[in-house]
Length: 529
Image 1 (cartoon, rainbow, N blue to C red):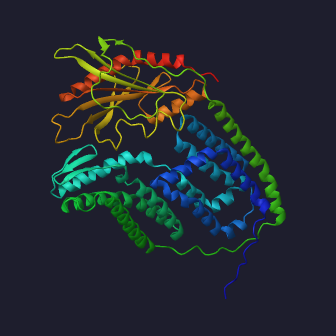
Image 2 (cartoon, rainbow, N blue to C red):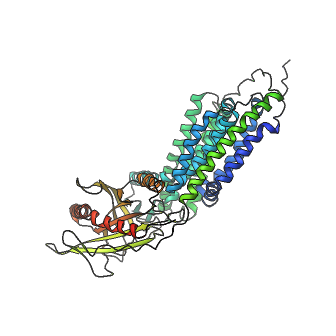
């Protein structure tokens, strides 16, 4: 005969009430962050899986209800320290406009509220369900460019290995049967994130050994990357062999998900062979009495009040700094002449029909400079995008602000990197890129540009997106506003890298006078509150 262990009595509502009210306060105070998360789930196929995270988390907690009922809540006030650190992270992310930081902070606050209100023992019992909540954060877009590069590298190499001639320009390549390009949907990020979430859940439910769980989760990260490379290669070859009758248009997206489903199924079938039985039920200890639960609930309320006060203070700081600024609209004017004999060309002059894809700047200042030189005039185009009163709709550093959009049919990026500037320059380096008009039968000579660009944040230069975000947040915290700009320099490409060297010298020499123009604009439009 087997012993029958009776289920412990359910928790009184008064035990759960402090945590439920704190959760409600969190979602109310950070409703804009929570709404932004749900908005991304709704419009992005990459993160549509996040709708499943809350119900799965609740189900995982429900599975541990017997164990939880045997634990006596012991609030941990010291958790207020990490909560304060996470609240500061949210504040900096809000001021810098980094959605990933604010959304990660919100989920972290929810997770940390459990040990703060109910104690470490309760948090340890549901560690995985709490960590699973982080899959609701729509993060991972930063991997798209690198994974697109990897996909293009593998596809081109595999196609060439198959004996098909291939010519590559950046993320676009040409084979005898047609032109192909690696776009965001081809990066495989959505496969990777979905596989990581499902693989982690499978490992938790099927294994007790930490080693087996780690191995399977690692497999769930590697498998979709390799599978996406093979998918891209097979789609190109199917299109080539069929004369572009198969695997073109929307078909190749359907084939991609079918292939991904097969890979995941095979991974689960293999993983199930080494599944481990559930841990034996431990002998139940005495359940907490009603008096113990009432005492624990009484100790939880001061913690809840302290956390709520801390979060209210954070919101007050943001409200103060985000009040609409009153000031004249910025009028950005670049100098008519620059050191070294450079002078502005005639109004409307341009090197090419290219413009950087920076969205909704507060002001722009395009200008072409030229000077006489042996063999003909040297010409450099300068484009400045100035940002002020930044928000989620208008901000300088965002993934949508790029030199060339993926959907651009007129221009493509063929190379990117960075280049150091000479000592003594206002900036240490610039980011670089090479742009080119795609090959077209009707175009005999294609325009090619060398580009250098960097950020100006309140008088300081940087090429780092992360550094720009941090500097912007600190600038706002110091009460100096959010004036910032991107400076983009371009010139017609010349052989042997001469244009890149000339552009480097121009940038190093002209950053100081251009910075003076930006600073003057910032001072003239200094906001008052």
